[in-house]
Length: 374
Ligand SMILES: *Cc1c(COP(=O)(O)O)cnc(C)c1O
Image (cartoon, rainbow, N blue to C red; front, top):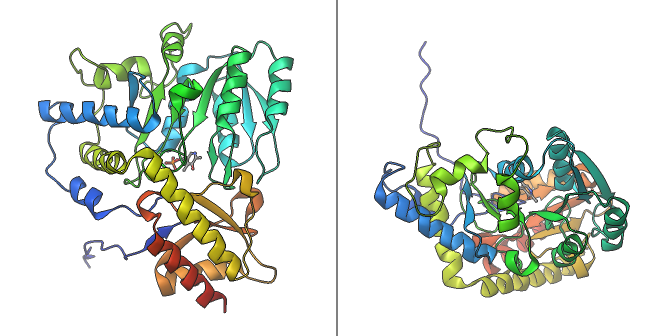
C-alpha cells in the first residue's frame, strides 16, 4: 500500500506563549516571494539593508551586526565560541533557564564559569555580581540574560554593563526576548556582544539570530590564541560573506526567503519606531495585568522588574494548569506557555510579543481564560 501524503495545512492559532509569536501576514507574504541566488546583487543589497535595520533595532553603529543563519541558541553559541578561549574565566548570571545555558556554553568552550545565582523569578543582584568581579579580577567576560523568558524577569542590563566596564570585563548579553519589546541600547550601555532571535518581539519566522559585536569584541576575536572551535560560527569567516564592502565570498547559503521575512519585520519595527513599540508593549501589558487581576489571577514577578512581553501568571491552587492550556488550544486556538524548570506547574507564561502584542489579543486571552476557568 502506498501512503498518500497530503499538504500540511496548519491550524489558525493565536500565539501568546514564550515564542514563536504571531507572524504578520505582511511578513508571511514577503517570505513566499521568489527565491533568488544568495550572491545575487539584489540579494546583497537586501543583506546590507537588513544589517542597517538591525543596527537600528539594537541601537548600535557596530559594523559587525548581522543575522546568524540559525535560531537564537546559535546566536548564543556564536557569542561564546568567538569570545571565550580555553582556560578563560567567565562570570555568568543565572536566574532562569537561559542563564544556565550560558554557563553550559562556557564549559563547552573549556573555560571556567563563575556562577552568580539568584532565585528564579527575581532579578540578578548587581551587588553579588560586583563581589564576583572583585573576587575574580582575572575574569574576562560578564554574561547575562537581559529578558529571562523562562521567568518573565528583566535584568538591569545598564547596571551590569557599567560594572563590567569598571572591572575591565567584556559583556555578552542575551537579547532574544528583549529586542523590540523593551529598550535595548547596545552602544549606550557599551555591550560587547549580543544576540537575539527572530521569533520573539520581532515577530518574524523562527530560525534566525541577529547578533552584534563591538570593536573591542572584534579585536579580541581577531587576536585569539586558538581558532574558534566551530567552523560554521567563526565570525572571522562569516564576515567574508556578511561583512561590509569588499566582495562577498561564499561561506554558507543564507536562508534567502527567511531574510526576506526578517527584513520585512524590521521594516515594520522601523516604521513604527522603537520607542512606540516599547510603549505599545508596556500599554498592552498593563491592560493584561489589570484584566487578570479582575478574574482573580496574580502575577508571579515583582512589578519593578516584570517584562511586558512575557507575563508569568501564578496558577491558582487546585487548578490543573496543563488542562487549562489544553482547553485554550483546543477550544480557542490559543497557545500560552507553561512554566519551565523550577516554575513548571506553578505559572503560565503569556507572551505579548511584537505583532501579537495588541489590544485584540489581550481581550481574546482574557475572555478565553475566564471562560475556561469557570
Ligand atoms: C527563545 C530564547 C532563546 C533561544 O532561542 P531559540 O530560537 O529557541 O534557539 C535564548 N534565550 C532566550 C532568553 C530566549 O527567550
